[in-house]
Image 1 (spheres, rainbow, N blue to C red):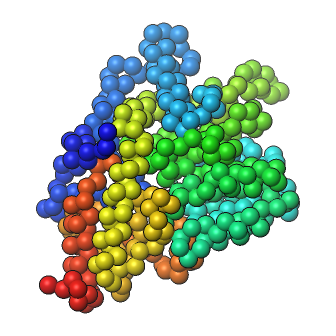
Image 2: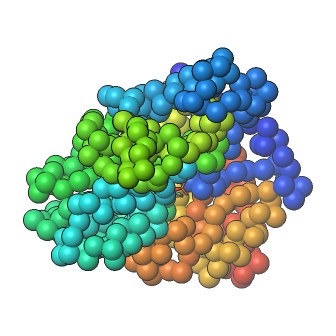
Image 3: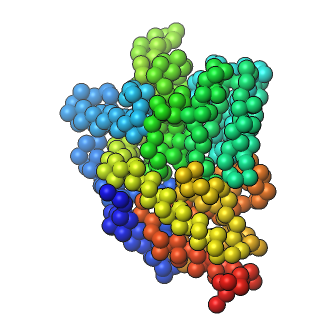
Length: 416
Ligand code: PLP
């Protein structure tokens, strides 16, 4: 059944808020999403009835908490079509997942003059860990270009991937342009030279049906907070067998098998990478977020976003004096829509629309390489999720008219 945002909104207490005397229109979902009541209640329920440390105690509470936590590993695995639950590691966020791979796989497998291939549309969390790895190992970084239509230049990427390439790390969906990259095709190129393909799924896992086997990648990383879940929970999936090849990232309790004075051996599977007490309550609440999304159906989530994104792009482009970045083909993009209002700084735009209760993002969106490519210091970004409705886009457009009026940039078609 298709998504009914007006109904869903009742599950999100924060959407009842008034901001500056106006109903909140929350259009900053690429940064983080709001949480439905069942997710919030799941946190309270855990602390009121189940709180115990996991994997260690044999008392009833510890067993219950362990089961609840491990059940979410299975849900996260199912969410991305993974074959084995044991290939899912819980981290703090996408950033930590990528850093984990850079340390645990990168340090052991890269050396001087090897190449790491990224793209110019990457989020800093898919750039900086590789820059640090390059500095540690002497490897070189290469960045694939973007075409004027906002798509990755796939031929330039193909030429870049060669015998020296050891790893390719690419976003599945851009947090600025909305571009969805052809991961299966990139996987073929990457594997043809024996390199590892890492996919930053921070923006795709919340918004699209994802199947890591169809994508053909070796690693896939995403964050719970961008998909109705709490902050502080990330997921790292690695293809079967890969985790076993990797050394630990952090040492401590729970990640060992045997500790002797001269050294230790490691726990098997994901536990090797989950040192110390994990974020138990938030992982369990993330399970509730996954249930919520799967009750809606990820196909339906995607359909709703295509609809509202097309509506927003059309409205922004026809209003005059606004430049929209990123692909126009709705099949090739997700719901992060970056734009500029001619002659008005993005921070001013964001401040003005906030006065109308509308939350959008202004800045470089942790994508300074992309800003340089677009030749802008910053953009505005509206980004959508399951609870957004057309009237919120209309409210944004009205507020943007106000921004244009205030800065003397009124298009003759829209002046009143
Ligand atoms: N990658 C992309 C494409 C993102 O949009 C983000 C967050 O905005 C991240 C990575 C980093 O996610 P987190 O801050 O949850 O680690």
